[in-house]
Length: 374
Image (cartoon, rainbow, N blue to C red; front, side):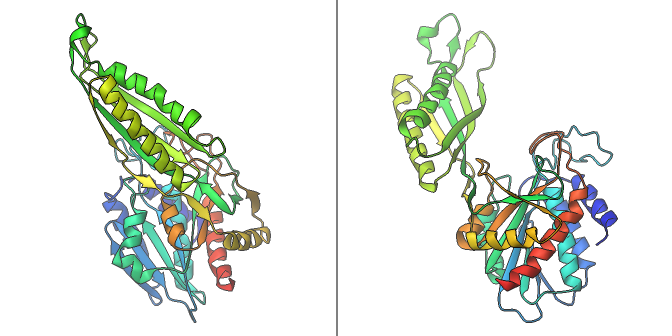
């Protein structure tokens, strides 16, 4: 696939971002592109809004998987690009348009010239939420195509084009969404003694949450609880009957996230008594850590260092990625692909350099061909 074709695909996908399990136009676009590839070695199936494509190898001994995510984010785009999002309030602000384009480019090349082993291209919905990896992994469609080894990439705005980065072991954290609702008794601001103020309760709860990390977690463990949104009340002279906290929990160890949740629930029970309210907790989407298998990272390092691309050892991050569920069941790895943008992931002005598209296709194709040797 030529570079101008990659640009056209990326820009078309960028204009139609859709939220998790709503990627209907995206799936239609991908299917339309795939049907124009050479079909001799391809078998395709769909799962919800996702797609699985197997490229049959010439003499397969195993199945190699490459996964890409396909959903967008509920963000208003502010790039002023001529191909900005046509979907109001939706944006490909995490580079999934890049991921899909690179995957299509590599798929087209392997359809023309298969490798020895079978290859499965996985177009997974709902990575940003509510989480598509785990239900896809457990589906009969995926199990019929299940690879023996799997890998994926993610764009990295902070890295120059031509640079890749990863590491063995922990790359991304265990993560959980966190939603806490408070219900008390509202009333007139002049009579606080007749009410149970949920703005006060929720605000106090936020400060107490930080004690869980500072004083209840092993200091040698890593964890962070963030409250990114607080809502409560209706007008300035009415004491709030309801309040809501929205945030995330992130840890470096799978077990630590359960410990934090238990501490939050214990704290909530105390608050219900001390603030005379009812508290409900919802953990939303939960993502398992991305833990790279050393054998495959070593092989990938060997592949990259033999090319014009630059290898960089990555640092672990507290970001979340549901690709971790695949790696929990299947050996493999994820890596960062440099795309050099002034704005980071999930930013309304994210604008990756499109020079990275062809480099991404080259890296994925080469890696697929070389993984037959492992």
